[in-house]
Length: 298
Image (cartoon, rainbow, N blue to C red; front, side):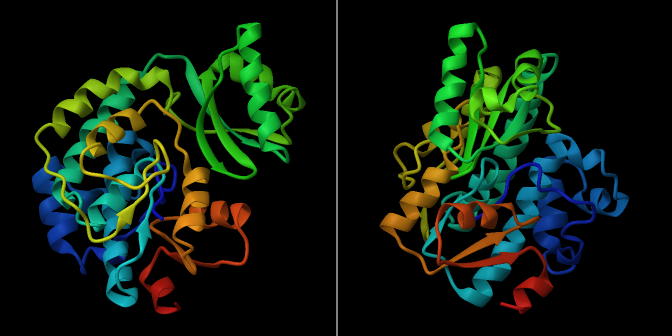
């Protein structure tokens, strides 16, 4: 399981530079035209929050930790990623090359950033003890002229919503209005995975036209419909992922039902995806691989 934007941390992956100079220095700079090594050495927290920096950075680091995990554990049965992390899963499965993924991610990140600029939109995490009622309450707000989108279905007790700042402020003042325990504002540039970023799809579609996808080494379940990737539809599903909900909770449930893996690993910065699994299914082994030392302990 591979994380998306928001998981970035100062200095993350520094230990990988000497292990993967070809990927993290040479190929990265040749593909994108800027130095990841320089970004890592600067340690600038505000810089790594920028979408055009954060997304390729998180992808590249997660990819290399994924390579290390495969060396030790072998190929996984299934891979999934949270939004951006979907590209990491596809690349490690050799469905998509590392450099092609960087190209797409760069275009995708810039196009999504442009789409939300001056949109007056934001996002918030919603914690609830009754997921179905909370979802129903959010949809019912439309009758009051309050358009709230559900951008991420994360687990059995959390979703991420997006919309106009004033609309989210309205429900943040009264979480009980949507049957929620807490509503936590997120530090984001705007309403990602919503109609606000639909304009980004055109540029992503254009770059995808020149990219070759292959049948991979393991199955990847996709955000848009929580079903396995197939070559015939992968490009359209990646394009539509941009402005549709990330169905991570459904991915977890489908994989548990269909594949029944014994162990779930979060690979990449942070540890957010293991928390989502822990809340959604029980009695499963969970591991976090976000450093060389964490891998040595497994």
